[in-house]
Length: 102
Image (tube, rainbow, N blue to C red):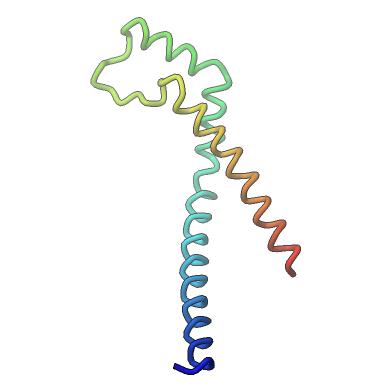
């Protein structure tokens, strides 16, 4: 294979990989943007005091045992909200790096 065909093949692979990554990012951002209201609602629930009341009710056995209640675990909501903050910072850094290359 000549250097010309090697280079074109390599760049074609780069194009395919980057195009696929771009499509995946667009889909992920669409889903993320749609969930923003849910994040806000969950954050208000967790930080506004209602989560604590529901947690205490669960501790007292007032919540049905067969009810899905992962939201009442001591770490699930906190971890998700923290992860969201870290993801936001990561996205900002990615945007900044891309803008600097323009």
